[in-house]
Length: 193
Image (cartoon, rainbow, N blue to C red; front, side, top):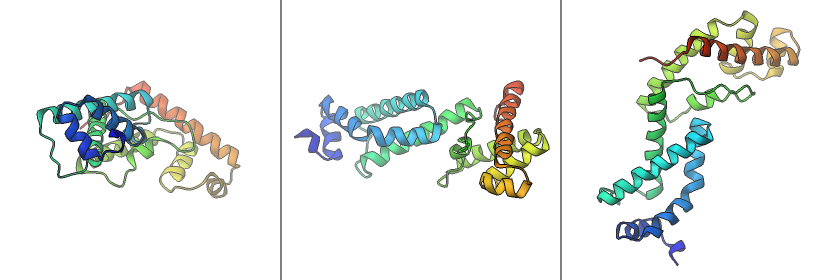
């Protein structure tokens, strides 16, 4: 059955005019590619857009006959998705959304070990802009934010270090995030080159 065919066979079938083969490939890798994109952009709608753009690019490349068999299909598609994620951040030149939870999602967007040069530049710019924003916070909020993010301390450790209750530390972090969001919106801050 077609469902059991290798990716490379399905790719060849699609190039030879079998549209169903592409559908099988998309379904086969949908979850993996979507999860990867979402882990970077943290937004369902943006994930959907980038996913569709990825496969538009895949289709164009396959139709033009410029796909080489050297690499495997999935890593090739992942590279396309990765590049489109970078394009998304470069095009918007905006801070990723702040989420007011303990995970502090913006740092999972920029804290990627496998940064290429382009992404590293964007990360450095975000870090530099963030530092300027953090400087505008009240001292007690800034202290908690820096301990949590840059020193990766738990709220229990922050509480012990600052001599306040865990609830107060959590509250300060929450207000720091709210204030950062206000500063960003007030100044309509964008990343500059």
